Amino acid sequence: MPISLESLARSRILVVGDAMLDRYWFGAVDRISPEAPVPIVRVTREEERIGAAANVAYNVVTLGAQASLLTVVGDDEASRTLEALVAKTGIQPHFGRDAQLKTTVKLRVIGRQQQLIRVDFENTPKTEILASQSASFLRLLPNHDAVLFSDYGKGGLAHVSDMIESSLAAGKPILIDPKGSDYSRYKNATVITPNRNELQQVIGAWDTEAELQARAQNLRSQLGLQAVLLTRSEEGMSLFDAQGHLHVAAQAREVFDVTGAGDTVIATLAAFVGAGMGLREALPLANRAGGLVVGKFGTATVSYAELMASVQGVLQ
Image 1: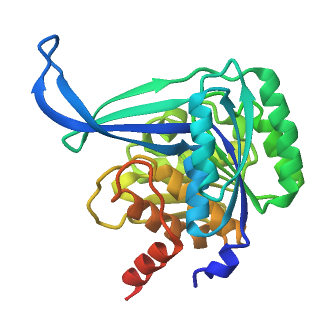
Image 2: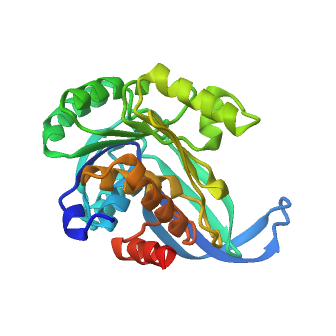
């Protein structure tokens, strides 16, 4: 039986990682440029959304749980826009500012309901700011039920190993959306949630399910993880833990946009684990939430009511 909204409301998740600002420029495409064989987009509407770790935290609060966001941003227009957007959501923001840092912005140009190009603005935060974030982390940790590290490879989690150690000492579940080919920095976490491409970078490509299971369990053992959750798009999700292997199939539905689906999955998992649910129990709910969000445009979220209506629809 899913946890009630009242119980979920007491779940407090500390989200740590790389926050971004997602910008969308929508427009009409009527002709091709005479300067190069590219479409000309006449921009008619602009939209700004919170992305990456901020979107993870937004998914947590949209579900009905509580979220604090610990991140490093620049001291620029984009960071102030991001902070203003975050403030409207109910997320508790804890922003470290680095004057040398360019707040990560992903600009997507949309024409004819398709993404035509994405332009990224970013660089890496300084070590001193990251050190001060570690102190903030230790201060915030006792007041939360679970810790979620959202790693987008932008440099904000340089001290993640130390933070994991502190979380372990405090007895907190640790959920990680990983990045890169070196997972040793995530040692002793509760669960990591790579997608297919991310896991292949670490364990290599597999030809059979048996090969995948053996390699995933070997990785779990090497890193001292309780579980590895592989998100597999149209193939659903596979959880590898001490009990073995649990697979949940994807729910057939029209996929509009996969942007941020991984954010929704790990946020849902964290919210319910923080409320006292086990990983195996929470897995089908995270799977349903991911299936709902791909039917929406851009970085999006799922509410508790939406999720429960979807689950009831499956049970009936």
